[in-house]
Image (cartoon, rainbow, N blue to C red; front, side, top):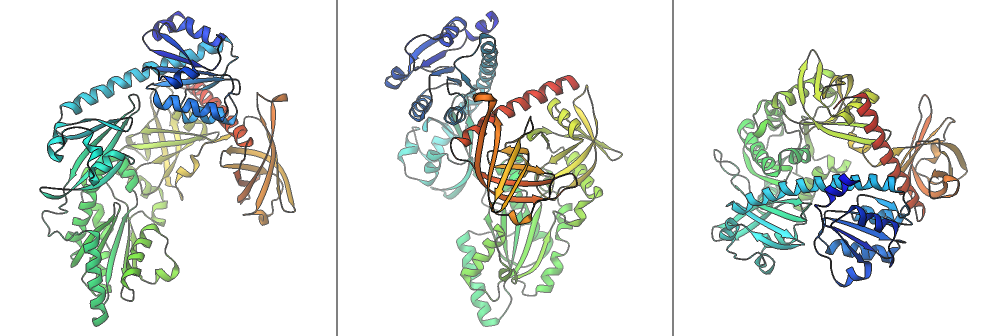
Length: 630
């Protein structure tokens, strides 16, 4: 206790309560926190409290009104972390308040000192981590202050700093002018509602494009925006045929009008970069934008086609208007486009995975042609729309990508280019994902870096999912060996998954005890056992046969969940839902129900999931530390 008190003495701590008298909680806080100040809930609402590092809230009973007051205090107070104590600490309102305010925990007011001391240890660790993070952020801000680059810093949605380079480029003197001057780039910097966006600025040198990149500093509550000028010239060695959307549509209109007289084909080629999101996440948007320009150059250089125009329709979607009217000739050029693309050296050795669609708009009007281009991007086209497609291609791999050899080819490429990967396992419904990289590949074995939690999860599952921007699809591999002392594992027999593994990552948990559950749908009633649950769905297993007639039907579920706050340790749940899957297996049949939980049942579900996740995290940490050394 003395050691914790010594650490906490270096932090400012505020204790806010709605009860007039001192409680055992507040007396303990006074004993262990030397630098603490106490406030009543009413006082804080009248006069905001000074900046603090940690907030304690002791609320006797959290209801909707109290939750609104706490949120108001949180919003107006500079702090790093907080914790909530209440008598109804596990009902829906308290848990929702704790989650929305990002509190460390929601705890009972009646808690013994031994458990309370453990919580104070967690608070101490959190504050020390935040202090280190703040030091790194402060250093980052010092670099920004001395840089000539274009930076804006905001606090509480108000500009507090603009760099000298920003002042000079956009002719402003004070941060507040960003809000006062009505220009697109300033409006974007005022909102800062997207992590990245491109804005056009019209100044003395004409129109210029800027990428606005937003970085959130969670500890200080500040936002730093970097304005990066984008070179609008798509190619320096080729004629610039890339135009604005309006100009592109004008050219398309001319082509369609000319077609009306000559009856010629009107060919457009659409290329979609399907791994764009992962590339942007891994390399940042400006690198991806450079890649987009390189793809355009590649098409111009290697295909030897007469291009009338090209347009970056979406950030990950490029449309080319082709002057050649001969469909067979164009198809012959496209036959080996992706073989040539594989040999091309793109920025950062990135491998773009692309879908290509060649459409003939000969019998289409302008509005429908524009709609078609958009439909092929969103994949919302109909069989009637499909008749305009004359050629399709993809380098993501179809059946040929299902074999081990093809999978190894991609992994070797990742290894040679030193690209990062992610490892994913599901432990009793809990998603465990960590960053990794391939250390080496030898004799068909893939050596990967791995942390303790991931090593233990791989050891249990005997398999792992690998994800990367440099993979056309998520990949699974068998776990051959997990080292107990060093941070690596050996994988074998990699293969592509049919679907993305991300669909497994919602917050679901396997139950720690057997939970019988009854499903009623029309004239059908089945009693089975709960497999896992989330706030969105429940999976149930049955040993008996299940009629497929219940698929897509409305259903009622009845079961009891463990709950420490209810009599006999159980709470009865009755919720409605819709059956979304009925699968037959060798050992049991499985039914998945999309649920629509109402109060108070949504709170009971959230409480169980929250507690079960904490148990699983502690369980896998404990088992991992026993099984493997750090």
